[in-house]
Length: 451
Image (cartoon, rainbow, N blue to C red):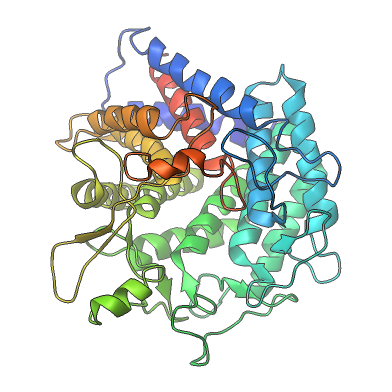
């Protein structure tokens, strides 16, 4: 059995040793039961086997608001990998339900036989429902997509012991090492040609395009993937790359204020429009803003990586993760209803942040739930009151994100976006990965705390 199976309990007990008193057994039984119900009856059982495409392989992409198969069914490596990860984790969590293992094996076959490029290596970004690659300028292959493949394959190996999955995860890691990794400036190039050659930024690209930049998003998910792979394959080169990414994200990508820049030149100079007009800044929002969701998610991913490398979270990483979450709570948190807003901005020389997007997406709230509970164990008496914020966020999710009629989570909090009630429950950028992981992790932390 792989090491990864045991890490969650050890990780959570390590947090408890830092000062959190163990509560009276049973005081949080109701919360654990609610998380369990939300993860199974209101999420997993709504998605599976509905999302499994038994005819053409892999998983369906579009799922309607009332959990029916939608119209657009192109298949992206990110979505397919996230479904594989979720079903693999469910198979490990609920071994008595053999269906999850079957759904995961089904997804693994699609990654291995269809999405993996048998001629050039690496995973295709997008294919048709039947598996024919769809040309995508600048995104034929990406570090981001291959990262999620590694993440899912590692989880599938951990759940099943299928060495073929581990072999493919290792092959993907070495493909990225050969093609995407930058040995001079460190980190990874995101946009890759079909054969793996990095696409370098030139002045010919539109200023609104992200192609050719290095970025925080692929970096944090490579960190996530390498952590998962290292837990089942403690390879020396993998450890070096994992540590390199951790230091890069913690010390270069993240600012002293506690938020991350989003895009970078190849030498890690941030892309910034803060001294331009408001119109230009708004036009480039995707490339340059404060993303509260990524910041709170990254705090968790850094601590998880640090723990994998050293057996416990190092103090420097813990301190930086706390600063990131504190910044998001101070500047991007809705004090009235709860929940993290989508984005803010530091205009010009301003030292205070301006909220520029008050929508609340589902994945940010999921990652916030996970990270806030984790920090409440590290810092139980901190004035930021992480547990209080966790409780308020859980209430927000129940009220504005979880669909009481059809199950699943809306894409956007209905306090800001009531139209989300009739929006898709699933599409190529929305599956069950963020919400299921948050519910599972929180349940396990609470269970470990009560032992």
